[in-house]
Image (cartoon, rainbow, N blue to C red):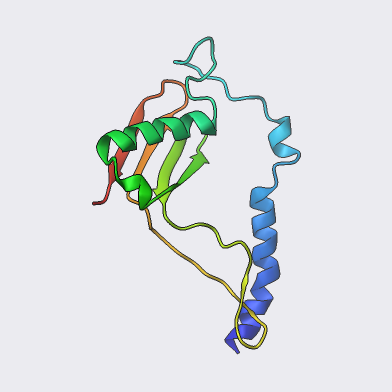
Amino acid sequence: MIAKYWCALIPLLSAVLFFLNDTSSAAKDEPPFRCQSGGIGGEPFVPDIATARAIFKAVKHAVWPDDSKKFPIIVVMDKGGYWDVGDTSRAKPKSPHLVPGGSEEIIVSAGGGTFRMEINKCTGAISNAGGIR
């Protein structure tokens, strides 16, 4: 009975994930991010994911040098005016896992990291940084 409902939800979940990952027209039509204050000539000090990731790695290594082995995956999310950066040990599953009977199993995980921070795109300021030891 439960499998019947999960099977009905899979197309809906697929549509939601497609919508969230679709960057085709909306993202291309948007102007590039410009700083109102900070940055250099309106350009942000931390313009891309690679720069945010490098800042995160440097700060985390200074605070907890050995922790990167336990939590090697760095996740960076664009939140408009800042980057939300954290670490985890869990990778996204590469494909759905089939359970006996041929239905798909959906695996949900939460947590799994120790350190996160927000990095202002325009100023490079780090805020809300913290971790769990």
